[in-house]
Image (cartoon, rainbow, N blue to C red; front, side, top):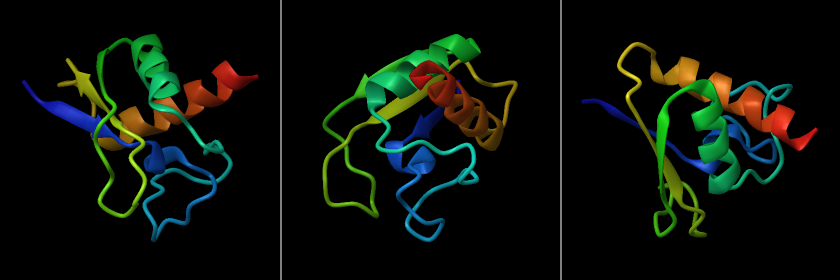
Length: 92
């Protein structure tokens, strides 16, 4: 079983691509939380496990990460794009 990892930095609009953002600015959101990401992962249709004590390698602060389980049929990029879109929808 493949687990994909999503860090908040992947969809953070305050970061540049060089600092870790993986989605376009029009899809990115400001200061995403692991709770929002986990909820969006579940909306997309996968299982989410939140790990709050993890740090992205390009950041100093501990913001956590979300493990996406059961996503064997999708690429990581597709999952991150869909999660970013859902976090934006959840905030509206």
